[in-house]
Structures are given as structure tokens and as C-alpha cells.
Image (tube, rainbow, N blue to C red; front, side, top):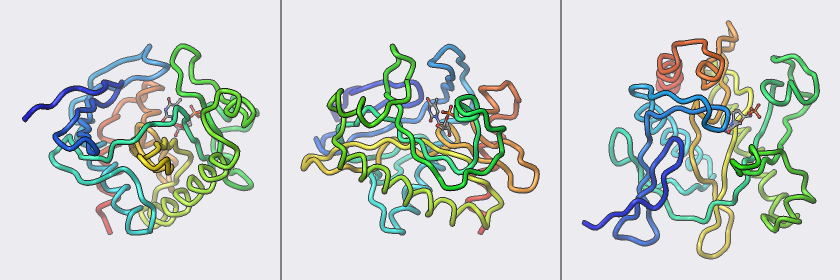
Length: 235
Ligand code: TMP
């Protein structure tokens, strides 16, 4: 079987398969923050993120939200549809935290009046800056109607994830989605949904169960990811 590395990112490696429309994603244990400045290999993280991301994509499919996800094929790998990734990080926030707290001065944990959606430019050289719609259009990354579709999809995913996580005692603080275009130009949910790309807090204790444990040196990173998976499978 001839397979080549198509792309290696910070947390995943993408391989071609015999089917040009399908690629294989291998989740790595590598864990980075602050544009790769902070780096560690965390034993078991790739497996946990593969399982968690597969769970979320399967659940979303049951709710009528299509994504690139095809199937999980091993502990650390999944098959997905090949799309052209739009270089935007689509961030939805229910509770102030992280860079939003810094930007607008709201303490972490303050509930947003309504969920909000923001766009960031996936560009390591520029440090992934937040972009306004006019910047995205100037760069030719998406049209205004594409952006409306992305906002709508992000808020739909948010509602479905909130419904899933609430009975499992998890607060969905915020999360990042990526989208790609399929051969017909349609925008499709892609990349991953995992504790690397979301903030999850325990609803009772507010304990952080996501990559902030790594970013902020809180320890217990993979134990927290395992707890998220345990909660997902608990009902
Ligand atoms: P932020 O508060 O740092 O802007 O992060 C918002 C959300 O986006 C949070 O759930 C973590 C996620 N995120 C990524 O998935 N990748 C990134 O590179 C960054 C900065 C954040």
C-alpha cells in the first residue's frame, strides 16, 4: 500500500490513502502551546484525542451535522474526507476565558450574555491574529455569505455540544472549529474537537479538564482528558 505524508501539523500527521478523496489522520502525543514555544510529549494524549474527537463527530452526525469524519480505524487514527482547509479558527464562547478575558477585561468564568463567534487567522508567522470580516474578505479567505454559514454552523455545533455535555457535568466554556471546502466548494466541518481545542470545566468545581492544564502548568493533563472521555461514555 502506497501512502505518503501529506502534512504534519503540531498535533496530527495526515497521510494519503489509496482513495484520493480520503486521508488518514494520526493523532500525536505531541502537545504544544503559544505557537509551539511550549512543547511536551504526553503519553496517551493522541489516543484520548482520537477517541474524544471521533465521539464528538459521530454524535454531531447523529444530530444532522456533517463533518469530514468517516471512521476511527485504530487507537490513534481515523479516516476523514479530504477537504481544503480554510485557514480560519472559528472560536465560539459561552463563558469568558483565555484571550477574550484579556481582550475585554472580563474575569474568567463570567457568562456571556449570548454565545459569540470569533475568527482567527491560522498563520503561525503572524501569531494567529483575530480578524474582522473585512480582513477575511480582503485576504480572500471567505465571503460574507461564507462567514454567515460558518457562524451559523458554529452556533449549531455549540447547541448540540451543550446538550451533550450538560448532563455529563461538563461546562463548555469555549471551543475552536475548523472548516474545509469539499470538491464542490461546500463548507464542511473538519479538523478535530478535543480537549486540545476546547475548554471544558467541571460544572461543580470549575476544575479545568482541557489543554489549559498544559498551558498553565497545572499538571494532570492526560488524566483530565481521560476524565472527559469517561464522562462522555458515562450515560
Ligand atoms: P483563546 O481564549 O486562547 O483565544 O482560545 C479560545 C479557544 O480556542 C479555546 O477553547 C482553545 C482553542 N484554541 C485552539 O484550539 N487553538 C489555538 O491555537 C488557540 C490559541 C486556541
